[in-house]
Length: 403
Length: 142
Ligand SMILES: Cc1ncc(COP(=O)(O)O)c(C=O)c1O
Image (tube, rainbow over all chains, first blue to last red; front, side, top):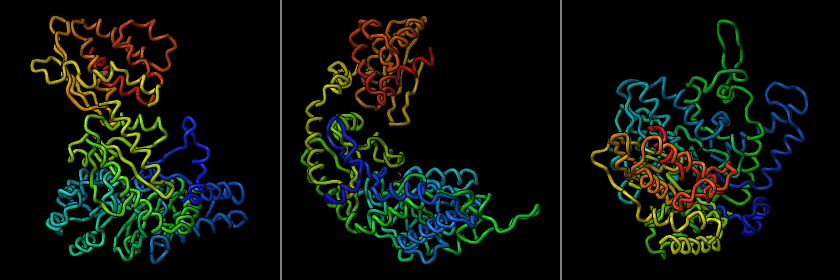
């Protein structure tokens, strides 16, 4: 889709020894379209001020931009109210905040928290830390032989002792997608609250939190064409209302006396301090861009490229693909017998191909697979079959150099 | 393939990576060290056997890229027969050879081909931790 690619200035400006950038690290972060860059610059240059109390222009314009961004996010994730949309600095921040404000005050010795074996460290370490601090137990839902979440094992781990189940929508290492609706339904039978790490979801499928039924969901703007430093935490209104503030400070209060503080209403209650206004405005522009192209369109394009890559890379002898048959995602991991992933990545970058090599912040998973790491390619709307062909040919060259 | 990168992966390095020197567990070691690079997950167990202040034997076992594996292999080979202070001097010298901030020509530092094989690491600062991983670890115990 050439018109779409031309919206991303980096592909015009960045050159590796005369060659264009082939960006196959989209699971880590995505490139930015001009409209997002313009929206951020436009805010700083055109109507910059703080949000909240200012009665003057441009504070009113900034506040309205920030508020509109929240409304855009609400529609984007299918939440019923703007009160359920909290801006954070990203997915990791959201996990930590839910751990601190929701889990910790409710967690007692002997309780359990469930996470899956495919979690990113961001959706693993905070829960682990909380459990350890309270004498609770972190239990890990295993994967089956096909590297999908083992739902029958999961079912057997659900008890009244489990306080939270935290699970990713899509594995950032394998590209497998979890059946969230089913998982959530199972968990809710035991009144377990479900936190969905949706970091890899926004460009893969339309999100609808109500349909999904999750209690919490988080994603990062930068993985969805938006800027860094902005993310979203969705929480069911009743949960957010009954939780202590995610952080304390200015902005989130109604009234403060020496003796006590009355908190503001949702969502302000959970957003202490000056928020990332430019980030929210940039994220809103990113959502406009996604809607213009279509989430389905982006997801389909990337999934087709993954499928094509599976076909092409299968031609390489000694290359192992992980979760080869995972459907409708953009992420594909592989190893080549006898060549370390970093050596592969080092040669690919010399050809202008950006990939990720290593454990992708999923130590428990790479440990289970008994590998030191993988090479991971992840696609987006601006990638093409020609790029996959070029990747395949370059891998052939690397193989003949090393082996 | 790109020449600059090919230079980094000289035949010396590939040879060491493919058939490393003294790969394996040493039974009667005096020192066992773990060299771990959290950034990339490379991990080697290093075994040293000191006797009368001399390194009588050295080996390693683990997982890493070609650069880190070869550099660990070269390290264990070069440590053999060295006293503590000789080993220390060797490591300082090697770290100078690969230091991107060092203006001295590598050839003026050493004439050893196996050490010089890593000079291209100067051009790839992001791979420096691969080249010096095991060396830095051993330096800590000398
Ligand atoms: C599945 C998953 N969860 C969480 C994160 C963390 O996101 P962030 O670093 O934006 O907080 C990532 C990012 O790599 C991810 O892929």
